[in-house]
Length: 101
Image (cartoon, rainbow, N blue to C red; front, side, top):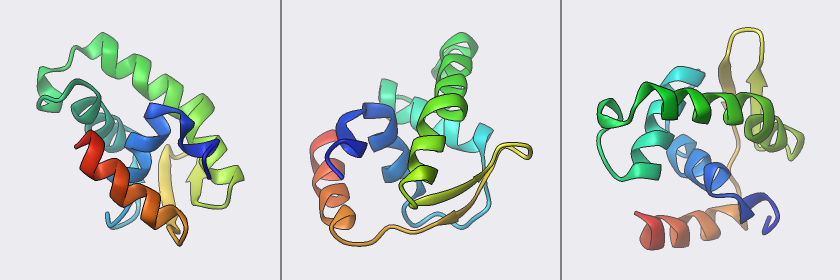
């Protein structure tokens, strides 16, 4: 769990995904992560930064979350189709939300 949460994009992803109805598109998740990352509305984050985040999510972070069994990510459709957040991850996510907003 700690290795999984060691990256801020994965922490942002999990905080955004927890409680969202599925499916969640890569674009929608990217907007949420960008907003958290830069602490401003997603539409205020440059397209270049959002593209960089989307690329990192698609190629690195979502596959790692899928490998850990937390999400199911359809790479062809660019959608998270299932989310399973269970203890002890829920406790860490609560702390992350309080600390990182």
